[in-house]
Length: 439
Ligand SMILES: Cc1cc2nc3c(=O)[nH]c(=O)nc-3n(C[C@H](O)[C@H](O)[C@H](O)COP(=O)(O)OP(=O)(O)OC[C@H]3O[C@@H](n4cnc5c(N)ncnc54)[C@H](O)[C@@H]3O)c2cc1C
Image (cartoon, rainbow, N blue to C red):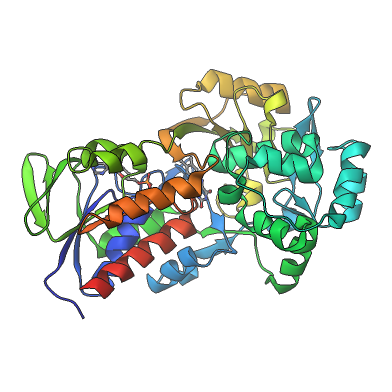
């Protein structure tokens, strides 16, 4: 076990905190600097409702967050989405249409629900059926829109890929990279030609269980558990300096000495910190663009809402979008989070400055809600969503290669090898293991 090595971590989102946790487990002293640990992950309780300030779950198929949670002793807190009521509406010509069952992201795996769906016209349905006859091919990286249109047609871009991905990546399918955002499907294309055929083969191996997982009392519980186990200095880092034997971090006019440093504060926030140390790395980091988002959460008396709320919520494709791009019906998706006599709507927008009035007006337009909410809570996340645009994997390779040339410097976070919580944990653990191996 290594002793005596000190690691300074800039940024205490899930990436920085979990890296510190794994380092601590290996006997390496780590200090996290962050004035607002957790990043967008946090939980508040309002009028008896458990509300998430940012993410509300993770993809159950990716095991790394769950492994960490179990290690932290929070296994009993794990909960799944209420998949008995798993249904999502998509707005089509002003009405809610059910997203066909059996979709794996943008890939249809069941014929009947697609054939019966009002979401697509016949042309798209025929395209989807014929997709299984494609030949394998390797293509250079291209946009998600080009990839999905090539396989399923333009309507699948507008009414599937765009609304599904905008909610996860906060970006446009015309700009996002297929290789980075849909890596599995790109691999299937190369191997089988058809992504439908590839998905079928994979599906046979897939385990059952809920699609999304979360924690009973909210994801804030995970941040609290990590904070209890790692050393956090609640200050912003103003500068970093390389010294003869390591690094120095300046926070609130104090200097702290470390042997190694981990930048876990996002590519955008790393740029001004690393620029005085290495111009080229700063330039490479600045090539990753960011967008922002906002969540308005409204609570109503259940009796004021006529809708049966028989789904997880709805998505609004860009062609029909006002202020809200997705809305979760919290009480339906997450049992136990909303008292029976309340109804809670979590309205997600890719405009961090969206107003309460505009969000409420959308609930009126789309769901006919005219009552006044009993509460309205806003969480803004400007410049928080790194965009995996076409060529992303090459940019990340350049960043990692350059960072690797600077002794004692490590870079982790959602900007590089996966935006979801499980990928952030995996990336953080790998870097902690690499540090341990190097000492
Ligand atoms: C609204 C929203 C909803 C999301 N929903 C989901 C979801 O449902 N499921 C899912 O898996 N993922 C979701 N994500 C993505 C996921 O939450 C993030 O990718 C992940 O939390 C990022 O973690 P991180 O530690 O890499 O970065 P961040 O959480 O952004 O952490 C970076 C930290 O660095 C700190 N920092 C910045 N500058 C400095 C400085 N100079 N000094 C010190 N500290 C600094 C910041 O305060 C911040 O805490 C969502 C993201 C958002 C914004």
